[in-house]
Image 1 (cartoon, rainbow, N blue to C red):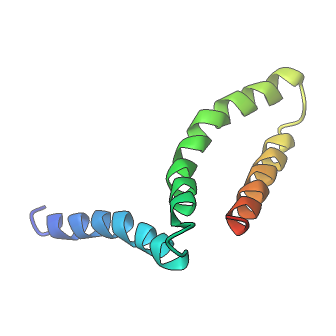
Image 2 (tube, rainbow, N blue to C red):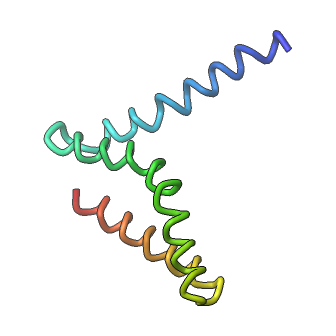
Length: 85
């Protein structure tokens, strides 16, 4: 197990640093803050909105396929928002 520890630490560090550095390189300093906010908020919106939306879909009695349609709508809105930052 001791030989795996440096690999795990390096992997966690790369997953932490590389995406934020990529966001920093893609946008100019004036709009970088908005891009970083969108990047930082994205992992929290799924667990926060997912149960609410799925509960609403379940209570209205619609088909289970609507969960995928709603997911497609959210992803499309995210892609459009990231284009207009």
